[in-house]
Image 1 (cartoon, rainbow, N blue to C red):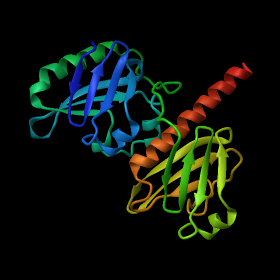
Image 2 (cartoon, rainbow, N blue to C red; image 1 turned 60 degrees about the vertical axis):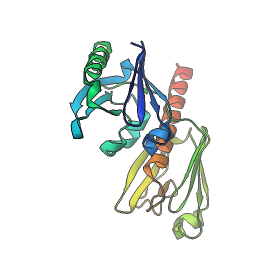
Image 3 (cartoon, rainbow, N blue to C red; image 1 turned 120 degrees about the vertical axis):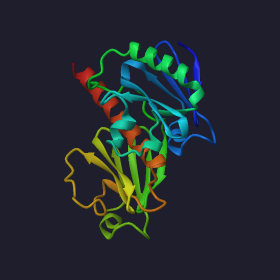
Image 4 (cartoon, rainbow, N blue to C red; image 1 turned 135 degrees about the vertical axis):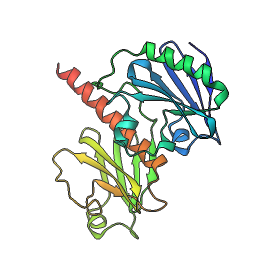
Amino acid sequence: MGDVLKGRGCAWEFEDGGLRITPEPGKASKLSMELGERFVPYDALADVMLEPGARGRMVLRVVPREGADPVMSAATGQLQESLDPYRLVLPAATETLAHQYADEMRAALSERGPAERFLIAGPSVPRSFKAWDGEAAFDGQAVTFTWLSSTASPAKYTAGDRRYPITEIEGVEWHALEDARGSLRLRIRGHQRLSNPNNDPASVVFGIGWGATHHSLPFAAAVLAAVQAHMIEQVAAEG
């Protein structure tokens, strides 16, 4: 391998050890552009599929193993098909080549079950985005929530801005913006999780125009990747 297959908005380069996905500026989805170029080792993949698409096109899709990609782990199945970063829409004329590459990738797959750790790098840091009730920032070491006086709940604004080091974070729950609702919630060690994210200082809530997927999902994935890396380092140090 080592060849490039260009589709709608992205180019896939098939290397010896994995797949390199490069979004095309101005044509790729906002999520793909935010994620940037990504290298996907073949041992991070569970499946490869080539399917008919609309208007005679073909769709080449790879499926990461469960737990191999922080982005898909954070998404928990909520991504719309059009935002799937592992889906390449191709012109019908490339069908023969697409079949060839699909067969070669399948031959390179080994373990298809759940991965014990992330095998695909998380999104780059630092990251930040504006939610409905505050601004979220992550510098690789800690997540900071800065509340907006005009929209944050009295409970959050009274509690004050929050800073959560990755040493205190156990996980991240991302809920896509739907029907004007969504949120990013941190699971904090020793913190009692409130049922309503509007009042939980370990959460920011989304609204129309605030917390869009292409901003908030890479943020959630970056935090997840950093938390797992810290846990692995901690286990290695203790062992």
